[in-house]
Amino acid sequence: MLDLKKIRAEYPILGRTVEGRPLVYLDNAATSLTPDCVVKVINEMYHCHKANVHRGVHTLSQEATDLVEATREKVRQHIHAQSIEEIVFTRGTTESINLVASSLGDMLQHGDEIILTVMEHHSNIVPWQLIGRRKRIRIRAVPISDDGQLDLEAYEDMFTENTRFVAIAHVSNVLGTVNPVKQMIDIAHRHDVPVLIDGAQAAPHLALDMQAMDCDFYALSSHKMYGPTGVGVLYGKRQWLEKLPPYQGGGEMIGHVSFDNTTFADLPFKFEAGTPDYVGIAALAQAIDYINELGMDQIAAHEHELLQALTQGLMEIDGTRIFGSAPEKGAVVSFLVRDINSYDMGLLLDKLGFAVRTGHHCAQPLMARYGVTGMVRASLAFYNTLDEVHAFVAAVRRVAGMF
Ligand SMILES: *Cc1c(COP(=O)(O)O)cnc(C)c1O
Image 1 (cartoon, rainbow, N blue to C red):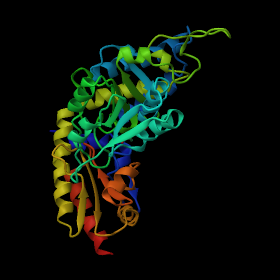
Image 2 (spheres, rainbow, N blue to C red):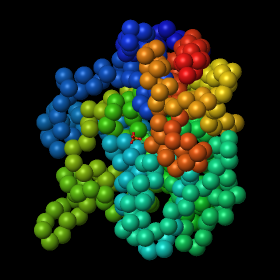
Image 3 (spheres, rainbow, N blue to C red):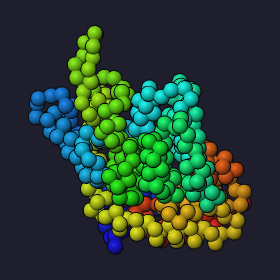
Image 4 (cartoon, rainbow, N blue to C red):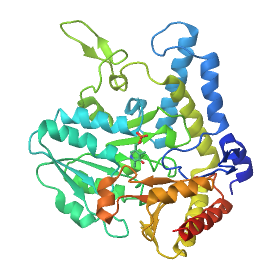
């Protein structure tokens, strides 16, 4: 069992008010809150270790470098990657996906096909479209059932001799669906097609094992898993990272530079041009320790209890439509009440102290699939309480009554 009182004391922001009412933060899928222990590391970095990494011989630079490389090892262990060469630091999931799309794009030909799904976040759609503009590749999207599950038969049928890549969300940021990624990766591999998993919504809630999953790439964001903003991770199987050309050029990513011939650094530095966010990277290690100390199982159990209470409470409100009811579902509930506009509902909920997300959730093709322009989304984290969930349901009921 999680000690919620103790946990919540680590988040000063949970003590603040909004519109004179206690804040109830239910926008965790957009960004998570950051515990004191992580903020402390950020402070320590500025106070004690502020020096550029991988460059200086001086003590401060060595210390900063060691902290960054210790995080790399921490991430490797956390996601069970084979080696630290497979862990690339980026600015976030978006940059991780852009890196793969851009580098892989160089290797694609006209007429090649890529498989995505209807439930992808824009950051796993648009980077592929940008490549598509350069190379006229074809993008296909796996459809979903009404309850928000991918149609695996349709997926399997999409593979042709021109299929070159698959990129899918591990957990949908709107529907909460936990996709059967292992099964989908196996299918793709049978066709010799590599797979990228967008793990932005999975990393905060699920234990990750790259060996068991066998994906070729995995992308995640620190700020959604209780770490600092501005840092992300791209995991890539070594043989793929070796094959891909560099994404950006600059310092750090080179072997030797001359105007005749420049060589590139070894992995993972080939993909880390310029000064990384070494402050944030160092603090990410603390966030990983923090969630592991709480226990991913405990986190999942508590969030599941909250999810059930939230789902049940909202269902009892007349005219509520919940989007996504897959049996395997993460702790987000997207919904609409009657024909009340999501933005209007969100504004009124904010007046009552509740922070939720409204609108298209960076997933406009998914909104189109359900024939709506937006939804209200309440997304949970382990520091949320059952009392908050009940208060939220009461608030939605009250707001719905105003229309
Ligand atoms: C948030 C999110 C992203 C983008 O993450 P950034 O941190 O903004 O780069 C991508 N995919 C999913 C599923 C997300 O929820």
